[in-house]
Image (cartoon, rainbow, N blue to C red; front, side, top):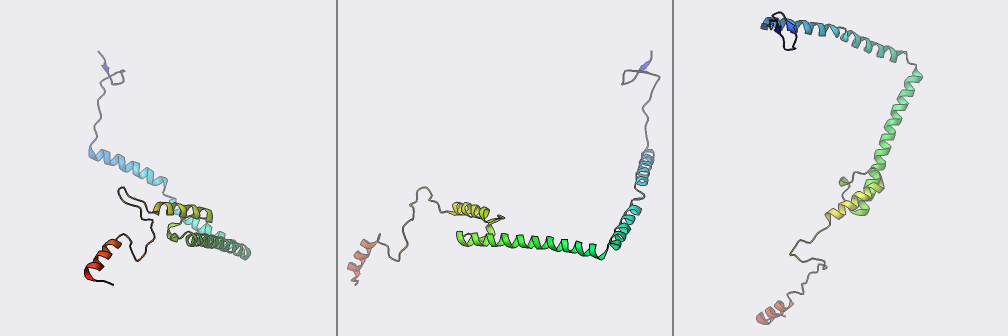
Length: 159
């Protein structure tokens, strides 16, 4: 009878091929050499691109260079102006709402006000279960112990 492979096809005594470590190393080295050959000209292309940039920059006229510098400076100015505006808005809201300016991250005054309100709501003192609220104004004298004071004055002969 004929031998049957794993595929279900009839074959004439196919054997599994075995590789030694040297064979595997040779196969891998061949593959790596082919891959390295694909990118052999990468350094040349990189060098040529650098030369192209230098040549392109040297061929620009003085007006083009000045125009690029102006555009860069305008971008910097816009960035600084925005930073200043944001900083002023945060400072204004922080002063109005009595919130630390470091906690505000909004870009405009409206957003900063919303953040400040949220911070104040979060930081609002709360009453804990089983405690009394302390909404009374603080004074130097406490009227709760007036009876004890009167007793002590009688006992020790106060004013």
